[in-house]
Image (cartoon, rainbow, N blue to C red; front, side):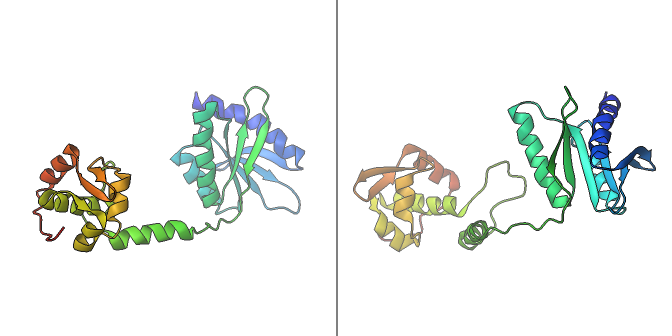
Length: 227
């Protein structure tokens, strides 16, 4: 099935290249499609029935021959197909590969990106968030592959607040912040993302049953004094 699909991609890709002034031949050595045009670098297209690691490995290997390397796959179908296709385009851009899609019903070839050197854009905001979490997290409580069960600095702060409330009962956020060192104690309890805290009055909080159970499960002794 894959071989037939790859074979079906060749005629429309050949027509598209010929319309751009290239002479095109298939299966030249390890190359699926080789296109030559006077005054231009050779252009290579690797054909596959879908994106795969093999396709990307083959395309990257062709960059030893020319910088003009494309991958060509059948056009996606459906919303989920487009999402996966779009993610693969991003990967190909990072590898310096061009991407073509071929529409099955009429052989229409669409260029989604050309093979150009890729320079990733840095995100100062993302970098700041990562470094902030690194600095605030105490120790290294997580193991790789935790399947979403991550102990974050936020959860560590929640545990400190819960331990204080368990030991001292209802407390003001400002007082908890002063004793525990969790400067954002009031905000954490107000947002209550874990469902551990109950607002009793303005700025006054206590633990919910879920919070008491979570605190008991951590087996953390209440080591803070004051309220």
